[in-house]
Image (cartoon, rainbow, N blue to C red; front, side, top):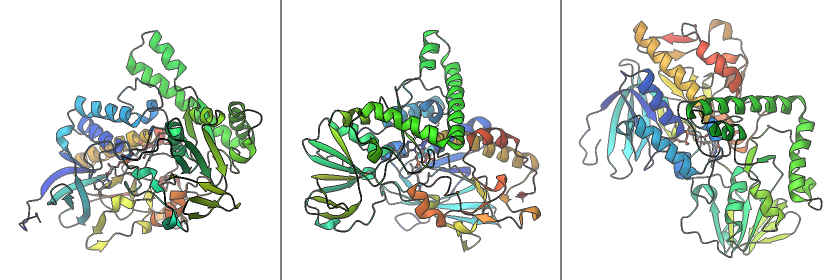
Length: 495
Ligand SMILES: Cc1cc2nc3c(=O)[nH]c(=O)nc-3n(C[C@H](O)[C@H](O)[C@H](O)COP(=O)(O)OP(=O)(O)OC[C@H]3O[C@@H](n4cnc5c(N)ncnc54)[C@H](O)[C@@H]3O)c2cc1C
């Protein structure tokens, strides 16, 4: 219904892409190139494209993986490997402009519900415009879910006791107030991941004192924010397209080696990573207490700290690290479990995400509310019992976009296959040989356990023991497996 109560005429598209982040813009690009006859629309609730890179506004906001692999495979990245949000947005803007994608994107459209009706073999999507309040209806044959995995504008804030008694300012990194004045202030940043490691060097110069408060240490990798091979190839005036491809291959080769070493010789890798930090912080620094994690490397994402900026701040005394637990907040700051008091004017919670399952959209399939957690995933992109839908969920240990490109190729191949065979619907289903397969949580928490997944794994689909029925988090195997997926396999039920 429109605002004035009159029903709006549904607008129909072959494909509806949810989200205009790096995945959604990639999906739009691939669809326009690989299935040029398909009509499509991209809906996003934000005022512009970028997703993560549009909504995050904290000081210093930057990528933690390199842009040769976080960038698309089809669009060369020419800048330093670790990029600011502004640089990533500019890159995405070029993709949109160069490929005439803007006319397909509609901003400020928040999707509220998606209803599948088998009798008409399509989705009905209801969206509300958050500028005018108007409700719009779309129909689409296929839903391409590029909504990411976390709730924008609502970060995860643990329920610490006494926060209401704190007289200073408490902010979450995901909702950084534009006018937050930290000049000369005492700031405590709670967290030990990439976000804390980014904010601290970005504000250290201007605030009076900044402390990173972490419960336990994390692994970091540091290095120059440059790729020597790219620089050499550029000096040799090699074509940028070639540089992009060669540097991607080199990065992926190095990452595969590193990942293998983390599994085969975790102690050696730990020592190497911690050794680098010891060198940066000096012999007197208590690296044991603050930068020696208890888990093996790669169990959590390892943030890259470009040009060692965080460690330079600590070494120079501009920033300090406290490894302790919060007992409670009080009027002047935080009382720690060790009975130490950390006074603060501003406390920043860099404490992670709240998972958003399928974009918090109300899904109904043939009149029945979807229980996403009851489905089983086909390679982390389709789900049993959900027709004509694919989801882009990238990698934890490699750049997200590597998988966005792979999933896009698969979806375009699937859509072309359906056209060629006259199929209107596709749903994945366990095959007779899969019936006895054990069903497990979405991800192996022994292998990878970031807080936001641990907190929400019960909301996510199940995975099976066989490779087809899981998101294996392994780009190096999926890059060969995805193009070889047999679309006539009995896991795909066409209608
Ligand atoms: C600060 C930060 C840094 C990161 N750095 C890296 C990195 O360096 N490398 C890496 O691989 N990963 C990184 N990540 C993970 C990152 O989120 C993903 O890599 C990637 O940006 C996700 O892109 P996406 O397009 O899938 O989702 P998002 O960026 O989350 O975009 C999804 C879009 O969908 C829209 N949307 C969602 N639900 C709805 C709805 N119901 N209606 C309408 N629109 C909707 C949202 O508004 C949003 O614009 C980082 C994450 C954060 C928060």
